[in-house]
Image (tube, rainbow, N blue to C red; front, side, top):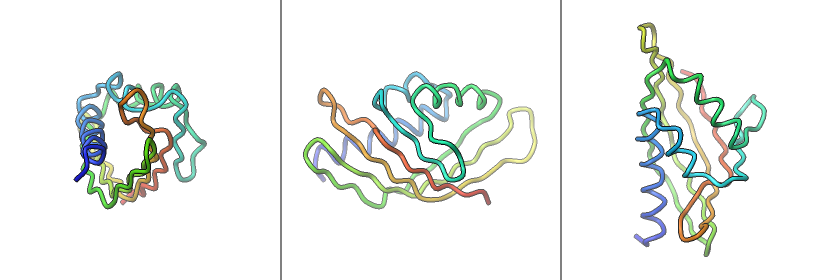
Length: 126
């Protein structure tokens, strides 16, 4: 496994752990300033929209797992396809919501660090 592939795997792991603890500031460092999120049935989101959306999750516990299917690196550009499973549980009790599906991320190496620049999230509710 190349250093770049390992760095991208580490980025995904950091994203999941920071999301689970509600560390939005850490998650924001893992994306470019011009990031675009594509979400089925929803308008696109930029970095500011993403940060704002995280406020709505403060009353929920987030647990996610990622099964990386493929990483390809082309110089300072790469893509990562993974299968993601997310469970969102209200902190005050109630039924958990589960979503699973594929995610395709395009990454760019900026100042020696991989960041997500585009992310197509195809999660579906169960």
